[in-house]
Amino acid sequence: MERTLVILKPSAVRRGLIGKVLTRFEDKGLQIIGMKMVFLSDSVLEVHYVHLKEKPFFKRIKDSMQVSPVVALCLKGVGVVEVVRAMTGPTNGRVAPAGTIRGDYSVSVQENIIHASDSAETAKVEVERFFKEDELFDYPQLMLPNIYANDEY
Ligand code: UDP
Ligand code: MG
Image (cartoon, rainbow, N blue to C red):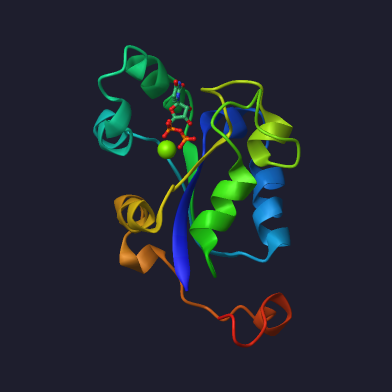
């Protein structure tokens, strides 16, 4: 089964939305296999957001991600990368549809509540960036037969 990385950004932590966002993933039927609070260093952010490093607003993004610790999550499920991106919604919270996490909880491009890996390849790299193998837990998801058909997983 696939894994993906989610980061509950300072906009979620400071606004007290950790529980609400976690509940969405639990309610959806995704399994949390890793979770920790971390402070993101300059060097981690420079790698994590390397595609934005040359942008004039890179420092603003970096500062925003260091306003508080964040919560890193590793979620597991069938097609979980795509499922979580759909739940996340577009980058800009002002245009993200209602029903998505960004659409329901944000009105900003930068302060948009969560990060979610954007492809299976990125997810693999990003999960390894934030979690050591012994920080990820392989435990039975007891409701699996009620979450998927037996030929889906
Ligand atoms: N971001 C921003 N301004 C922009 C583009 C991105 O502030 O014009 C921030 C925003 O917080 C976004 C993050 O940088 O979530 C990473 O950008 P990316 O294009 O990867 O968007 P995402 O994958 O998060 O939707
Ligand atoms: Mg991205």
